[in-house]
Image (cartoon, rainbow, N blue to C red; front, side, top):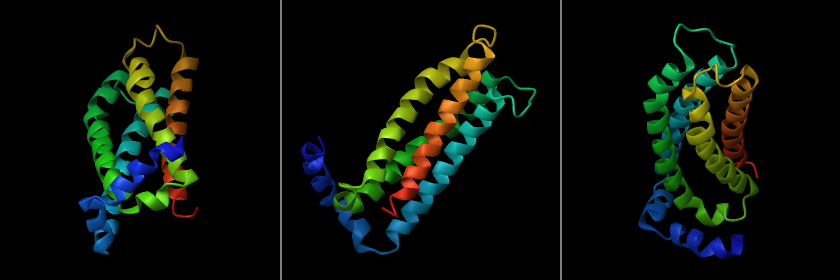
Length: 160
């Protein structure tokens, strides 16, 4: 499967953006800083909702309202993460081609995004009486696990 993707990795590595990021030593760290700040905002917003779903924080706001209020932060930071991630990827595409942590990060990222905008959203927007406390907590634990996995796999890219 990965062999079929090699032309895509090669193309990214040869784009003007990828070459620009490679050429100027300050560009990669600047983009990476944006990437990490956006990841922190995303994880913070999701963490806050999930902790309330787990009953570890008590607010006078419902989970649904909290998720709705933090939704723009979640969505905009996710967009920023994806855009900055594409720029970072473009500069190292060939290096990342055989990277197991990168493959894991992308698989977990796609899973986390789909999970967040389907199951997680459905549970946070549902009437809590319709869904039992076990499923609410389970949803939060899966969410936290996926997003933590994305961050940890991303961090592992530099080591493997």
